[in-house]
Every structure is written in C-alpha cells, then in structure tokens.
Amino acid sequence: MSVPPSSSTLAVAAKHYPAVEKQASLPVTRAMFDELMVPCFAPAPFIPVRGSGSRMWDQQGRMYIDFASGVAVTALGHCHPAMVKALTEQAQTIWHVSNWMTNEPALRFAKKLVDATFAERAFFCNSGAEANEAALKLARRYAHDHFGAEKFRVVSTLNAFHGRTFFTVTAGGQAKYATGFGPTPTGFTHIRYNDIAGLEAAFDEEGGDDICAVILEPMQGEGGMIPGTPEFLTAARRLCDEHDALLIFDEIQSGMGRTGALFSYMQKGVVPDILTSAKGLGGGFPVGAMLTTAEIASAFSVGVHGTTYGGNPLACAVASAVFDVINTTEVLDGVKARHALFMEGLRTINSRREVFADIRGEGVWLGCELKAPWQGKAGAVMQAAGDEGLVVLMAGPDVVRIAPSLIISLDEILEGLARLETALGKALV
Ligand SMILES: Cc1ncc(COP(=O)(O)O)c(C=O)c1O
Image (cartoon, rainbow, N blue to C red; front, side):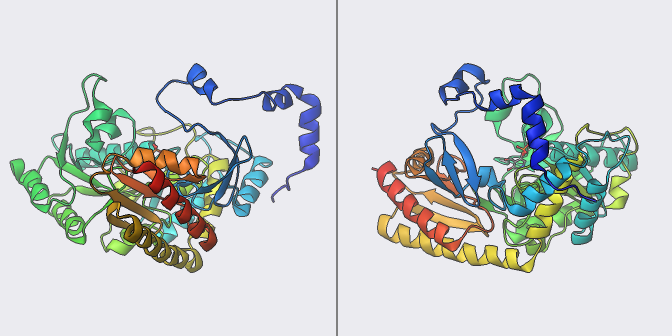
C-alpha cells in the first residue's frame, strides 16, 4: 500500500527542522564550485535549477533545450510524472534496508528485467562503473571456478569507456584516464574497436585459453559514437564460445531504449552472457544493474561480492517506473521516429554549413563528426550551444554528441536544431 505525498509532512519538516529551510535558501554561485569542489570537473557557467521534460531553467530563469539528458541519463526528461510519483510514494514508505534483507521494489524490478531480457539473474548497484566492476569480477570468478586460476585475461577495446574505478578504467583502454595512479590492474589486452583480425589475434595468443571475457560497448559512446559492426559483435560471440570466455556487453549508455530497442543487443542479433546497465536505467536516480544467466551468476556465492546501496528501495521503485514507461512499443517506436527527424534536420544543417564529415548513430544517440578545419572544436560547439540555450555533449574532441530524452517533443527537436545551427555558426569561424 502506498502512502500519498502529503503537504502536512512538508509542513511538519518546516516547523521542526528550520535549518533545512535555511539551507535551501543559501545563495549559490558558479564560482563556489572552484572554491569548494575537487576540481575534476569544469562545469558550464550556468547552473540549472529546474527541469521539466526536455527543458531546463537556470538561476536567471533562462530556458535551455536539453539534447544531452545529463549524459544520456534522463531518458524520460526531467521530473517525469511517473518517476515523481514512484519516488514520492516510496519516500513515504521505506527508503533503505540492508542487503541482510531483501525488499519489494528490488524484487519487482528484477522480475521486470529478467522477463524482458536474456537474463535470469540481476545484481543491483549504484552506477555504471560498479555494474562493470561486478561484471568483470564475475567473469574472472566464473573462469577461476570452472577452468582454473590461469584464465583471467580480459579483452577490451581501445578508446572504450567502462567507468572510473581502477579496474574499469583499465578496461577502458584510454591511457589518459589510467596513468599516474600507480600500477594498473594486469590481465587486460586491448584491441581496436571493430577490428575482427585484432580480436582473432588476441585469441590466437597462447591459444586464447587464458581469456575469461571480452567486454564491449555495442556502440562506443565516449570513444566517438562508433557503432559496432554486426560482423565484429558476431565474431566476438563466436570466439568467446570457442574459448569458454564470457561476452560482456556494456549497455550503460546504449541500453534502456536509447537505440530504439530496450537493449541494443536486441537489435544487433548477438546475445551477451553478461549485460551491464545504468544511466537511463534510473532516469536520473542513481542505479546500476548487472544481468546474467543463473549458471554464470552462481559463481558469486554469498559474501563474494556485495554493495551497501545496491537494490535500494528508492532507486528500484524509480527504476521500475522508468522501465514501465520505456518498455512500450509507443516509446521505442517513438525513438525511431525521432531518429529520423534528427537525421533529416542534421543533414539539412550540414547541407547549408558543411561542417560535419559524418552524422551517425542509432535511435536518439547521435554523433556529428566535425570535418577539417573544425576538428577539435566539439568543446567550442558545446559552449556556444550553451550560450544559445541548448545543451549538447561531445564524444571526444571531434564529435558533437546528441542524447536527448527518448520522449523529447518534435517541436523541441526542431527548436534545438535551430539553436544548434546558430551555435555552429558562432563556434566554427
Ligand atoms: C559505456 C559506459 N560504461 C560505463 C560508464 C560509467 O558509468 P558511471 O559514470 O555511472 O560509473 C559510462 C559513463 O559514461 C559509459 O558511457
């Protein structure tokens, strides 16, 4: 039984906890970031304070069209009513129990994921990195238990992105993120993305018997919006099968409807052994998941892996609501329709401006690769877009990335594209 949100609860809080009210009214400026925060980010000059659907407003009341949704996170836009309802109802029911107990929202959510995918078991955590950390540990443990301690090598791709824990950042194969932190975890082989010969060569080394897993993004997001070719993904599946290795698909960015399927593997015709999800999974509430088969999952017995917050009732209640909205023909077909509108609009812009060498992507997950002499200017486009009231992303220095809400309105797409064209005109001079 859910308890409706009550204004009297808020009134009680205001009366008894005035410090909370006071805190909310403290004036805040962008300069405070540099004074207070560890400088591992360089945020935009404006601070969004409110969001609704695919629009955000900053402290000055200026409206921004959101073509970024965080970084492919707010899949249903800002403050979607189904999510607000799930969150506020759960907030008045129970927030947290330890993993010494289970809870109803977690089990309901797990059932939905298992029913809708190849998977038979779910592990919940809080972020993409943690989902991949769990996936890599599980693959190693499974190989260890079934084939011996020598089978630990992980094949991953250069320019991938799998998260910022030291294990996942090493898997990512981008030296700039892993250097300077001391000895990196060993047992990784990096090949070029979409390079079938390179993948075969990795398996040929020492007979490939020490390889426990291949981890891949079905489309490289951070690495430049590079779709995985069906041949490459199929070869990865075949080689894993031939060598008793597990295929891990990192669907943290590609999953939850972003490409027009619930998970991208469903469109690619290649089924992984382990799938990781986060970002759009919670639509803005931090949650991650690792999905796998019952047989593989059994390599994690009690105490072998864990988390304090994974499967938290609040997170799972919200994620369940997100799942129910996204996993419908209406939303998934809508993503395909929006893809067509974006592609048409971007091509039209390019026919006038001639700034993109390539426009590619799947669903509402698009990359516009800048051509010479504009290479390296994706950051400048992002900034200029902000000045025009549009939020876009980059995927490396050459690619402007677009990853809006799956249900962004057609009018907002057109308005956002118009703003993008103005920004391109200003940034690329
Ligand atoms: C494909 C992919 N994997 C993993 C991650 C890491 O997720 P998180 O930042 O939630 O740890 C990201 C984040 O950008 C991602 O795009």
